[in-house]
Structure formats: C-alpha cells, structure tokens
Image (cartoon, rainbow over all chains, first blue to last red):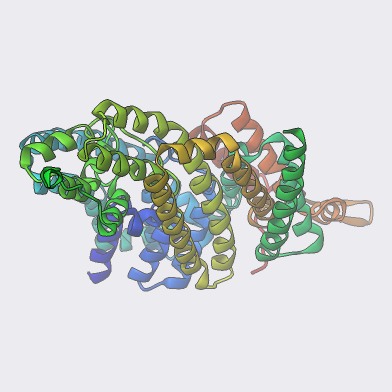
Amino acid sequence: MVSAILVTIIATMSTWWVSHAITRTWLYPLWSGFLVALAMGEPIVGMKAAAYIQLTYLGWITAGGTMPGNLMVAGVFGTALTILSGADPILAPTFAVPFSLLGILTWQAYMTLNSLWVHKADKYVEAGDLTGVRMMNWIPSGILSFILNGIPAFILVRFGGDYATQALAAIPQYFINAFSTVGALMPALGIAMLLTYIGKKKIIAFFFAGYFMTVYLHLDTMAITVFAAIAGVLVYFFTVDNKKEEA
Amino acid sequence: MDQSIEKQPVKLRKIDLIKHWLGGYSQETCYNYERLQALGTTQAIIPVIKRLYKTKEERAKALKKYMVFFNTEPSFIGTVIPGIAASMEEQAANGVNVTEEDINSLRTGLMGPMAGIGDTVSQGIVYPILAGIACSLALAGNLAGPIMFEIFYKAIMLISGYTMYMIGYKKGKSAILNLLRAGTLNRVTEIFSIVGLMVIGSMAATRVTIVTPIAFTVGEVGVNLQKVLDSLLPSLLPLIAVLAVWKLLVKGKSPTYIIAVLFVVGIVCSLLGILSVPTAG
C-alpha cells in the first residue's frame, strides 16, 4: 500500500513539473524508474529496467510541448510493470512502449485542459490577485496530473501484481525470447535519434571513433568520455586559430 | 534643497532576482497548448513586480503583459530572458523610457533562438552523455548510475541557469546579442556534440545487444555465424541496426513507425532463429 502511494506520487509529479529544480530529471525513465524501484523495494532490478527503458528514449527531444511518445509514463509504468511481473529487466522496453503510446493521449489531455486554468489566471492578474495567479499555476494542473497519471499508477501497483505475474507466466518462452530481442534492438532507436539531432556531417566521424574504440580497445563508457573530452578540447583550440586568421 | 522631491529609485535586491530565477523553474508546471509557459513566466516574475510597484493596479498592469504566448528552454540557457526582463522592468519602474512592447518584443524575439540553443545543450548533449554513462553503470548493477545522473544533471542545470540569468540581468540585451554574434555558443555546442557522439558510438557497440544464433555445417565443419561476424568486425549487427534506424529517421519516418518496425523485425527474426540476445549472464 505504501509503495502504491509512493508510485502514485512519482507518476503524478513526473508529468506535473512542480519545479524543474526538483522534477526536471523526473521526465527521464532512468531517474523516475529508479524512484519507482526504490518505492517498490526492488532497487537493483528496477534500476536495470529503468536503464533499459532509458536507452530506448535516449535521443528523444521534447520541444514546444510535443512528444513523440510519453517518456514519463514509459519510465514509471514500464518499471513498475517489470517489477510486478518479475520479468527480466531486458523486457522492460517492450512493456514500456505501449504505455508511452497511450501516454501521448494523456499528455495531450493534460496540455489541452491546462489551458482552462490560464484563463482563470487572466482574471486574477486583472484583479491584481497575486496569490490567485500562483495558485492557478500549481494547483489545478497537479490535480489533473493526479487523475491522468497518478490514479492509473495506483491501480496498476495496488491491484495489477497478480494479473501481471499470471500474464507473464502465460506467455510462451519463445515469445519471451522474441520480446527480449525487441528489447535489445530498441536502444538503436534512441541512439539513431540522437545521431540525427547532433550528428552534423563534419563531426560524424567521432561517432565511429567512439564505436571502434569500444569494439577494438574494449574501453568502457567512462574511458570513452575522457578521450572524447580531450578530442573536444583539441578541436576547440585548433578551430579558434583558424577563425582568428580568417577575421 | 529642491532635489529632495525627486523620486527615490527602486532597486531590485539580490533576493528578488534569486526568487525570479528559481520561480522560472516552475514555468512549465501548468504547461498548456494555448499559451505554453505564459502563466509560468507571469508567476515567476511576481517577486520582481512586487518590489518595483506598490499598488494593486500598477502590479496588475505590469504582470498582464506576461500572460501572452511564451515558450523557450527554461532551465539551462533560456533563463537569460527573465534576467533581461527583470532589468528592463527595473528601468521602466525608474522612469527610463521602456515600454511594454519593448519588453515583450525582446522576449518573443529571443525565445526561439534560446530554445534552439537551450534544447541542444540540455536535451541533445547534457542529458544523453550523462544518461549514457549512468545507464552503463546501472546495467552493471551499480546504484551510483542513477544517483550520479541526478546530481550532475541538476548541478549543471542550476549553475548554467543561474549564470545565464545573471548575465541577462547585468548586461541586458547587449550581452546576448554579443554572445550570439561571436558564435561562441555554437562552437561550444559543437565541442559537446563531439563528446556526445563518441559516447553514443560506444553505446551503439555495447547496448544494442543482438547476436545471431545461426549455425550450420559445411561438410564436417560446424560454422557459427556470429563467430564469423566477430572475426570480421565485432558488434557488426548492432552497428547495422543503428545505421538502418538512422536511415529511416533521415527519410522522415516517425519514431512510432520505427518502433512498430523494430517490434516486427525483432519478433519475426527471433521466431525464425535469425536474431537473439546473448545467452550468457
């Protein structure tokens, strides 16, 4: 019961961004999923599930309130369902994706209905009622997120456990294998989306540098980051000189 | 002394600026399609307006101009805009000729470019690099992964956001124009893109964990296709997968479409015994 309530709060606040100083990272499956994992008392399994979901959405950019899929719902519900069903964490993205697609609808409902409170706030501004303006910013949107995200999360965690384990047990092993393969493929999407976003032609070779340094030299991500930073600094200073000469 | 009649200048205090900057992090609390961050920015600037104006009517008038469509990146870089707005409000309250239109045209003029740079920095660089490293740690069962992600992300966000806000307040609009003109931001962005690219290159090799279980015999010799591929180029299949998805994206296919493709390809290839995940561990 306690864990269900905690997950309800996490689900609510991952969409209702009280303050980015707190909730900015709650958008991301890695952190919101990890919080769910802590709330449900399965930190390690849940963290791995969250990380697998995160990899799928690594390159997802949300700009201007549009989202290709609902990350917050994917992270919270995907991790919760993985823990509830006792499935292998690599299956987490397969669970998360349907939620994230449904989540597009709840996100659109949230963004649409929130417009109503802005009109209320217009009246408070007109009257010079500053407290009223502040209340309109926080309270109605919080209640709305609780209804759209919190309550479904509560139902899932409180009542979904038995169904989830039964459903997982009913899936034949070859399908579990197939879903694992899908899960293993999913990070390709996150990585490719990031490539389209930051991979300008003149620097794209660095992608392959990172790739082959890992494949042949077996460097881990931390080591790659160190070398990447060095490469970045070198490029920066060498291009400074060029620019100055041109000017 | 007749100068004693002159109005005492109203100055913003440090605490007002800090409240305004921090309040900006609640700019997307009531995020909505109609005016996006309008209500959020209005609510954030309340401490500034309260300091500068004493009567209800003046405050209402000053706040009203913020209730218009506004959308930028509010956490890392875009904080420069409220910084500039605060300095302009201060000038206006002290009789300098700054009109409502001046303030709003500047804000709407900057919100696009700041969103562009800000989203690239926050969502295109800081987030994937940190999340990439953190995921590697997390999948190895290390709790430091997500915790490190949280701490570093927030530290970078708050330091960058505060610095940009204060630059905006102190230097006004000239600061940001200079910054844009010199192209410094673009070049720094490019450097971080290099780091980002190498990290995701590494992740392409380690995190897309597909192998092929195909094995057959040629005469007496058993051939394990994955071993052959590994001797050719280790992690060839993951690279092909990433490049294929990239190709689809460049062609303009939507992420949802690609997810559907990955589901179908993954399930079909697994059932046919063409692809699988490594069995070890």
